[in-house]
Length: 378
Figure 1 (cartoon, rainbow, N blue to C red):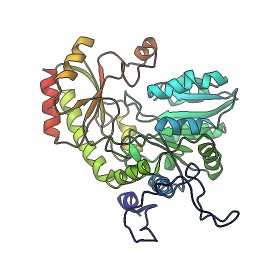
Figure 2 (figure 1 turned 90 degrees about the vertical axis):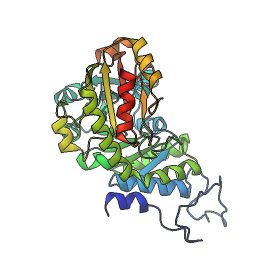
Figure 3 (figure 1 turned 180 degrees about the vertical axis):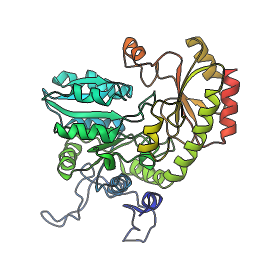
Figure 4 (figure 1 turned 30 degrees about the vertical axis):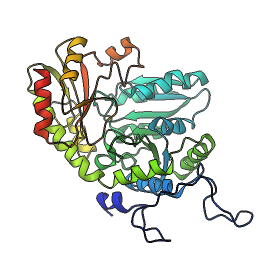
């Protein structure tokens, strides 16, 4: 079954009781049982809900797996994956990553004496150098947030597995339409389903997909025990969004490429980060590892924080807001928004400057998006 067909049908058979084409919203907290152990597969909606099951099955299918779990947010999914660690364990992570993930690593996990070492996203050799006898996870974002660097998933997976270490890939920026990390050797795939998978900026959610059933069962136990699950309506909204994932991602990419080309020629723009540009340092890896280059573009321009404020205030089509992956174009200032929890000196050492803007290119007409950027930068 091809991707677009999976997005519409996987986990979403017509309802057997009514024939309804759309998966019902099972808005219930509990389920009738006929005697001891006499339930029909569901007992309590924290443990399982039919609408959530459909979502989990669909996302797993899109990542070419049978084992998927849905969560109330991307960070809830992260925390569930990190429950695989115990006191004294060690992780290796790429250094360019979402600020909320960094916050969990440095302000939550560190309380339990779980240490994280950071290496440059593109330096494959550095990952192996950073591995210790107690290293249990290698955590990757590719493309990274917000500098859009790529990690060679296949190469890192080979290194990790030689050391009996799991590989987690945050696939939020690519979506499974453009990249399927399990096929490249990763063990766990993470999504903030708030972003491209839902695609309509109307629900917060997360998901994790697993290659190995035993690892899946371990995290599933945590999912039920900790309870960070999405409600049935949120699950239904996300399922609805998934149905158009393929067509949306194609338009996101087409528009992002046009925007990246425009920005790369603008006299006020110093640097453009987009893996679809031949000038991007990881362009060849992107062509090999991804099926497309995605809808995210970051750029740095000449000016000060005051100039940043003036630019975002002048935008008319593009909205200045956190998040990404919706049908509408959104722009954010990572240093003060999504990555504000990372200390300034660390942000700047990684190339995340005060004049860097991250643009989630929507599916509006590309000419309108470019015209909006042009007048704001003027």
